[in-house]
Every structure is written in C-alpha cells, then in structure tokens.
Length: 260
Image (cartoon, rainbow, N blue to C red; front, side):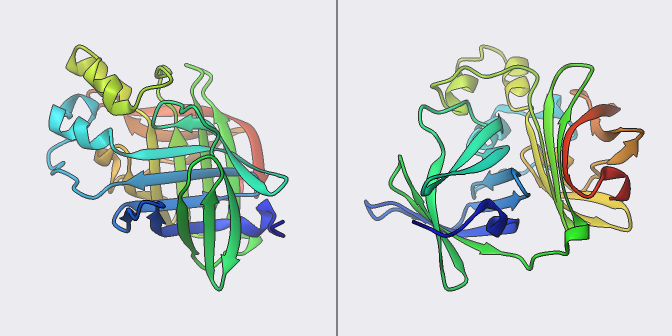
C-alpha cells in the first residue's frame, strides 16, 4: 500500500506524459493540477488551438472555436484517499460526468509522481513546482447567492487555479462535443462551454489569468477581492459587458481570504 497521503500532494503539478497499454502516448496536452489540503482543481488543454484573436466574450465564439473548446478537460472538487487509491471527487467538471469514478494509485519514482488508473489503464507522470510556504496557501469553496453556481479557488504561492461552474448541468453519458452537436443552435452551444477553469499568477495584488477554458479570459485579471465574509470576481457577461460576481465562502482551507 502506498504511504502517500493527500497532505503529501499539496502544491502545483504539471503533467509531462500520459500513456496507455496499446502504446499511445500524449506529451503535448497542457495539464496543470493544483492541490490544496482537500480541495483541488485541474486544467487540461490539447494542442492545435485555433486563433482566438478578436474573441472578447462567449457570444463571439464561432463553431471552429467551440470544436476545440469541447476537446478540453478540467475539473475541481475534493481529493480523498480510500484504502490504496486516491479518488478525485468532481464538484465542477468541464465535460459531462462519466460512468466511472476518477480513481488511481499514486507513488513517487525519484522526483516524478506516477499515477496509475484504477478503472482505466493509463499512466501519468507529474512534476511538482517548488512548494510554497504555508502562509501563502489557501483553498476556498465558493457559492454564488444570485444563481447558485459553485466555484473553487486555490492559491499556492504566486499561482492560482479558479474553477467556476456553468449555469446548467450537462447530460451525463455524452462528451461535450456530442452535446454541442445536439445543441441545435449556436447560442445554446456557446452556453454549454461557459465553465471557467483558469490558471494564473498573482503579482502586486493582481490575479492575472494566463490559461483558461475560456480563452477570452486570458491576459485579464480575475478581479479577486474580499468583501466582508465573502469574495468577488470580475468577468464579462455573455456579450462582453464587465460584471462583478459575488461569492459566499462555503469553506476555507489555509489562510483567510482577507490576507490574500
């Protein structure tokens, strides 16, 4: 049995490889995983991204953009250890829920974290960035009082990962690409990809997004701010008009938001 605990996995990880028994390998997809004491978030973006120049909001997305966006993956929730396996419980998922739990064995081989799937036969290689001090880490579970959406925000040193759910759940048992194909109109398809998972850095109090499932968010500020016992973030609405979203802090791990 592995001796690892969830506490051993805290920090920011980047994936260098996923392989399958049939010989397939992927070393080009960008994958980042940020692990807090319990909460986590994960972003996965394939190669071959089209040009998003001039795309400022959800309603600017054309079918060629949606086709690539639907190939992305990303999820956030709670990581648990059960016996010899780790289980990634998904509270937020860019793709529709699949039929199998996300479970794997984890072990270190030198400085590489090896992940071996329980229900699917894959192997992943993970590499951790230098771990930050305890006083520079936080993980927040958030709820929006206006529309009931959920979000998870994690910070580790200067890095952050923010995951915000879409307004309506997608049907289980299909891929996002299949959902888009069955959408029937462009606006409905655009709304289906409106699930934000954004990676970025904090500098001089500004939370700048560098990668996102919604590429028009890249290069912009997350707009994170504290307000009483809650927090706010900034984002454009579907037509690109600036908006501020209020969040209640459902739970907090690490330092309190007002010190971020």
